[in-house]
Image (tube, rainbow, N blue to C red; front, side):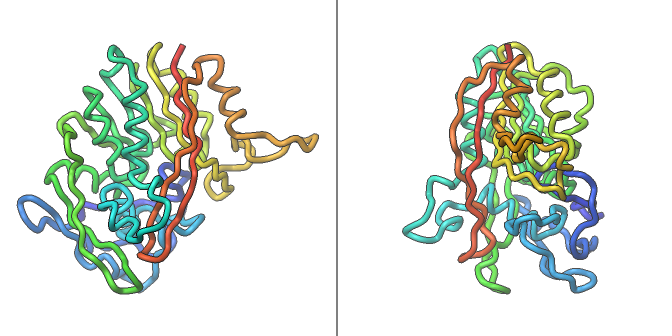
Length: 311
């Protein structure tokens, strides 16, 4: 059985259903267990119809179930710093983005509000694992079946082998490992929809990293955060506010447009108008991230990172 189930996906973390660009991986092209301590990819670059799948670093890419997407995100989350940015120059402050966002959540969490956390849009799980150093239970949720399968396989085996593109067909084998100090037994991974999380009960922390502007109903996610976070708990909301109609209908955008009078609607202001009655804004910073496509091509971005404390 293929451990990477197939499903259409059209967003960075959670998105409306859409047809995947290019062919899906066949069951024979899955992540295979290679040794008791790890797992390895088999023929990820080959597809049943010979189609080419775009990189997730390509703006507007809708492929998050493919082997390429899983590999790029394993690299984004777990690759050594020297391989993520193999130059003596460049934006080193953008490295280790998932771990840095988890550290923000941990730093702002109260000692009496560390029972249950949700990492919504967890991708392949680095932030979820990092948060287990602080929280008793951390639930990672992502719309992508393939991303969740990768996070679960890492939890099961402790390490996962993958490949990184250097140039065209030249590839380098790497290994994703559980972060040092993480307590994998505290982590749980679920495939799910951020716009419809269901009854998750009361929680102490929700993180949503580079998620909001890839949701078809971003306000529905914010409402869940309002409803579920306990007083004193936190929402760590991190977004570059890259609104695109292929992911979010324009009438659902929270900012990033002008009103009927021509006035600019700022995304942070729009989010603040929704959260302000229920949360206090505790911290706001600009946080850089770097996603590698190959050794000479990267996506560099800056997200607006806010910590909101529930009143």
